[in-house]
Image (tube, rainbow, N blue to C red; front, side, top):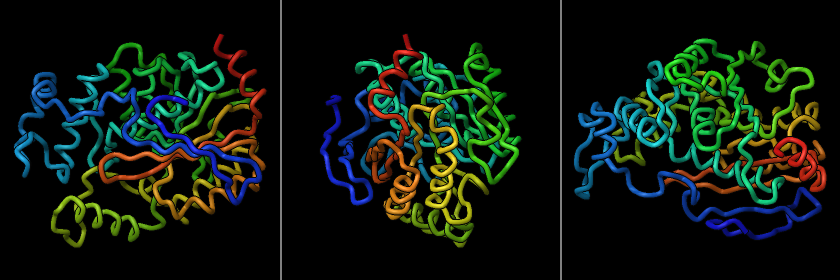
Length: 331
């Protein structure tokens, strides 16, 4: 068992064989953000952060996490100090990701891939990020943490233009990270994965909400949890707009489409994965996995502070085929 996780086997009602469910007790052991933020060090790296740091109700240095400008400044400092990434920024109103949670997703993907390499995380993995957004956070962190090669796709050309600006500001990243525009809003893998192209894993942070009003309600709940009075239309502290936040049917419908489309690429990817924000989405996702006749799937619970989520991973390859995949690609 990988250190830092408790694993139990359970019989899932939609799959006849046992499925491993991993319950994470804290941030992943390899996550650089398990402790409190070292604000003096972050300020020394990125002096602009100082303007947003003050003592909280407990007397500890912190920022106002309801302030989107402060959150962006914290992200810039973290990326510079912990990952050596400079020039990171996003246009106003685009999704500004919480870095510790995004890093956790990648570390658990590394554990998943390590199963096909005798427990050793492959450094040569090739990863597809569905909906990379304007922040490009998964390719940036994944390349710095593990040296992986990435393709980042999105339907928003302006978002990809911003990510390319970040790549250009950091020598070597453009060679490791390729950006592709998804021209069809109804497709996920089609039009992005090229003929005879293979990926070791795909990842996705899907639009969680089913409508703009649903997204607004979620924002109001977030502000309440932060102890802030909610306006009729409160600011999004982590930003996000349009396709970043909502789609018809919400995350369940989006992920079910992803699962159905993954069948066409079943032999060209070791693991398909996605975040799932709402536990209520899981039964429908599990039904879609059963319909797709996947060989195996996993649900890995994750948490950052009060925020709880999970990732779901599935594969069309059996255990022997997965080991053969690792031997063929990561020697």
